[in-house]
Image (cartoon, rainbow, N blue to C red; front, side):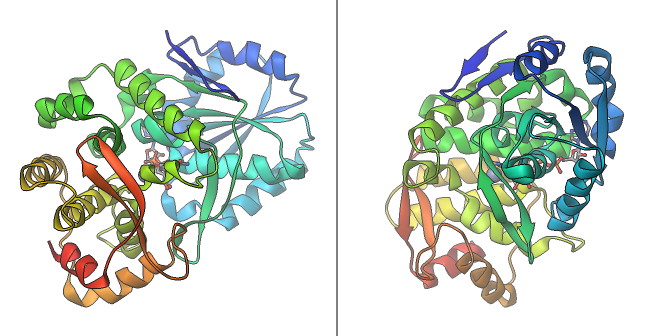
Length: 348
Ligand SMILES: NC(=O)c1ccc[n+]([C@@H]2O[C@H](COP(=O)([O-])OP(=O)(O)OC[C@H]3O[C@@H](n4cnc5c(N)ncnc54)[C@H](O)[C@@H]3O)[C@@H](O)[C@H]2O)c1
Ligand SMILES: [Zn+2]
């Protein structure tokens, strides 16, 4: 099964879980911690527990985006101190993007940084979040406000973990796969379009491998997001605002669902600026609307959404910056968009 090398670490897709043992040996780990939430403890830990030879300490947090917080980090840092983690300890992040982002941040800040292995268990984390070294937590209602860039020691991706994910979580992850196609590959888009809503019959190993290769290729050209990497934010300027807006409300959206809403909105902006044509816009809309049930933005909510967008990390001097399509399969970044057009697009 494929191992995808990056200049800094390797991504192992669908090897044996027991390869964790050789990685621990190579790292020379003094102690090992496995971070889970209650769902990955139930569905994923048994397989890892059967494979891992070295004794480990289990760290557990409550699942969910609202626990991707400094409070959870505080608890985890305390646990590391109590269990005498030292500079040679290793943390294995067994979970979705929340566990990977937060566990990586905890590892990357503990004693100025200890090693961690990403073991992603959702489609979103396997295809996207586990790659690229962006780590962090939400703060004051804003997505990923606190964080660092730091590469994992390795990524071990085991696609059989996806079997216990529900349909809504799979679809959420698939939004990032669609994003990779829209910004980078017309041929991948054609494949995705022809599968329509039947994507979950796909060969996960192949789909995840392709997504990882795309992300690695973009991230390695610009690891700290000074330029090109910003195209990965297509759908995320609006997506993060919508995700933050509904966080903790009954209309709460999964990350990928918010990104789907963001991609529809930002494809509309791309169309209005003459960057894509009406046929491309309709293709994008029709696929995303057939896959996701998305909220209709109310006019009264627009000022709050705009405020959230003004807090986006990609902005400069309070000017909201977008990554927009040039055509299906190509994307540009740092584009200023007039607020009137942003408002219009949110109501589209
Ligand atoms: N670092 C990055 O580059 C990057 C990229 C994209 C997204 N993200 C972040 O990722 C997060 C979203 O990730 P996510 O969608 O994986 O969310 P998540 O980690 O909350 O996982 C979703 C749900 O699935 C459960 N779960 C995980 N694996 C399971 C399995 N195998 N079987 C059954 N249930 C399982 C979890 O407990 C959780 O309830 C967001 O915080 C987002 O900001 C980060
Ligand atoms: Zn995302």
